[in-house]
Every structure is written in structure tokens, then in C-alpha cells.
Figure 1 (cartoon, helix red, strand yellow):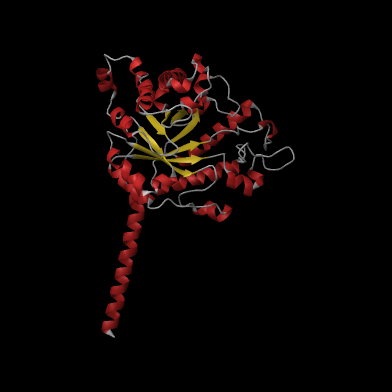
Figure 2 (cartoon, helix red, strand yellow):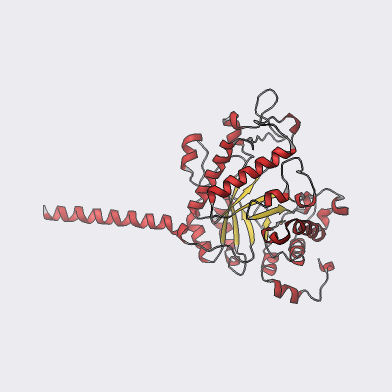
Amino acid sequence: MKIANFFFVFIIFIFTSSCAQQLKNQTTTQNIFVGKPEFVRGIHLSAWAAGTESFKKRFAPYWGREKLNTVVIAVKEYEGQVYIPVEEIKKKYNTPIIPIPKLEEYLKELKSKGVYPIARVVVFKDNFLAKNYPHLAVKTPEGGVWKDYKGNSWTDPYNKEVWEYNIEVAKSAIQVGFEEIQFDYIRFPSDGNTKLCRYSQTHTSMTTTAALVGFLKLAKEKLNPVPISIDVFGLTPSVNHDMGIGQRFLQMAEVVDYVSPMMYPSHYRKGEYGLPDPNKEPYKTVFRTVSDAKKLLGEKVYKLRPYLQDFSLGYKYGPQEVKAQIKACYDNGVFEWLLWDPKCKYTLEAIEEMTKFTPASYKQHFSTLTNTNY
């Protein structure tokens, strides 16, 4: 009997110790806090890339506080899938959850190198939510769910249930260990017959911006003290209207911690900024957009964190084109940037060279060079 009792106690001890270790492992990532680097230099990874060993091994040598110091990982995409555990909305909406393999382990590894982790959350473009819960969707005049030219549907940016849904995703990302939330598709629909869009409220160019700002204020309040950032169209700092999607650069920038205009030269129309083909002149295109953003932000220029192009679309981009865009930022006194490549390959040669610079070392290094080098 005594032997049986001994083994029973021993088994309970082992089980309890194992559970305690698992709990410790689950909370380790949240407990490690690296904080924002002085100058963010980062890349975006899709959920697939962040969970694939070959991608993680390829980037491993480049991570570091004084090197590539920031990673943006997609935790919710426009199809509606969420790539982290989100218990509450899963129960209520049957949200498709596809967890990134070993995400907490990967975040722990990155943080050990001083890498700042940001979670990217696609907000109002959400196929799953719009198609399965039509009361949350942008509608047609007949009351059906509106679709863009590619068949994608959007949730209604005026709908506060949609706001809460996305904030819950952001909260879950913070619990996993992310230290900043980046909201993408924080706008109204485009790329379709938007004249047929119908919303739950009166729709004007002023109410659109008010809705987006309202969402951001609520998110800021509910996610505090975690910083929030947003992605906006690249031209927003250069125009004095909402571009038909509700995005007014300054009004939105005022209520968030950081703002990332997507300054991809391939996305600018020919003739923009007086350039015959902005895609072929990455330095001039980015320089102008950064300059316009700086003028608007004034003393709050520290909020500016450009998204730059590291992919080819209509014109071949390589190390020189990527470095030209980063140099355009540095020449404007902006030393933060993020790179975007939908294939997550990235031009590591350019990254390795351009992450070495501080404002002081850059000024010294390029004092004898001219913009024609790029």
C-alpha cells in the first residue's frame, strides 16, 4: 500500500511539474519585453513565411538590435483567416483559425536578439466576416453583399461590432507576445464599382474619415499602453482629400503612434509628381512622399515609418532600387523604414548595407556622394 501511495504521489508530482513547465513556456514570450528600437528597420512576413523553417533560417543571420531589428507578422489577412488563437471570436463567429506553427517559440528567439515584433491585422477587408455575417458587410442597393472586381467582400467600417471584432484579434496578438499592433486596410473599399456600396450610416467623404478615426481612437483606448500603427496609401500625404477611401493622412496620424504610407513606386501613376514613370525612379518618388509627410507631421515626424518596395511590378527591382528608397528616407532625416515583399524573399544585400547607418554615420559616409549614385 505504501509503495502504491508512493508511486501515486510521484506521478502527481511529475504531472504537476510538467503542467507548471508548460505554463511557464506559454507565458515566457509575453514576459520578455524588448521595446521599440531607436530606429525601426524591418520586414513583413506572411503567416506562412513566419511558420516555415527555411524562411526563418534564411533571415536568422540578419536579425539584431543594430541590424534588421523589427519584424511585422501577419496575424489576420483579408480572406478572414486568423493565424493566432482567438478564443472569444472563434466561439461567437466560428472564425477560421490557422495557428502559425511554433509562433511563440519564434517570437522568443527573435526577442532574445532584440528584435521588435509587430502584429499586422487586416481590418475592414474581410471576406469571411462579410460573407458569413451579412449584417456586418458593405451592401449593394438590393441588400446583397457587395463584391469588388476580384470577388472580395468588405465589412462595413461604420459598424462598431466590426470594430470590436478586430480589436479582439489585436488583444490576442498582444497575449501571444507582440509589442505593437499594425492595422492594415484601415479604409473603405476600392477596386470595384463603389457607387453601388451601401453602408449602415450616411456616407460622405467626411463621415468616412470620422469612422476610421473613431475606430482608431477606440483601439488606442482598449489596447493601451501597446502602441498602434497604421498602413495608408502612399499618396495620402501628398493630397488634400480622402482619396475616396476615407484616408486623410494627418487626421489619422494624430490618433496613432506610427503611420506607414505604402510608398511603393510601382503603385504611383505615370506622371505623378511630374515623373514620367515613378516606378523607374524610386529615389525621387519616395523622397517626394517622405517630404510631403514631414511637412504635415511637423514636430511629430517621429511617427513616420515608410513602407518601401522590395518586389518587382512592371520594372525590375534589385539592390540598387531598394537602397535608393531607403536613401531617400535618410536624406529626409527619416531613419525608420519597413520593407514589403509579398513573396517574403527580400534583398538581403541592401538590408545588410542600409541597416548599418545611424544619422551621424550616414552623414559622414555620404557627404561626398550625390543622389545620382541611386
